[in-house]
Length: 313
Image (cartoon, rainbow, N blue to C red):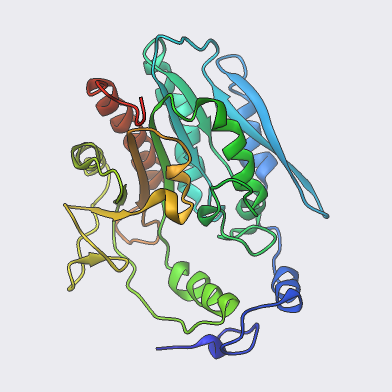
């Protein structure tokens, strides 16, 4: 076991205060461009989609516009599906997989679904290749009313009017080596807790909702993705990232109680993807392709199984 003392910020056993958060913030630097990498690709889709700004991160050093890609004409007779990426800004294929789907695959669903795609929920984190936002808050534990994270609050507000009518929501993520080398130790330090080392799974896996599981939906996604890249095996304990494997490549978390993005609507079909970009068996292109394949498979399954599709209706 390593402890908070091994992290360069803070005192072992003591949660961070403002001084420690300021020290952490001072160590963050821009490493890539949201405008160049993401916004330019969104802009290129304006002739094909309704592109709208749904919010703005208002940070002291910079403001970040938040964009959503939507079907040009919503049809109330069609189901609505939501694809989100970049909730954790450092998880690159979540962003670029969502954009790849919009650029290449979305046209195939015209007249079948109303599409809503938020490809980069956390642009501040994207530019700094970080899990947290500027306030050292994890957006993917903050999708709730009165959220402390601007990123999460903006998406909550975007989907609030359609929360009960979304058929499917897939949230695109990655699990990386830095989860163990940086973000896990930083989280333990921030919260004044000991760091418990874990094992990074080699391959793609999914997180289903503990409170409303859809095992066949998850397996349909797994079957599609395994044609693109390998599926993560269970570890010696039969687990992936500390959770029991319930079927090949699938674990479960309670989405809404944890404030996870995948619980931001009341969709029946929900999933969080996780790819492993640091695997020697996968390229960045494969990771992006895996995310796009997962989105396609998720929509296809949801469309084929629409009856009683939305919780609460």
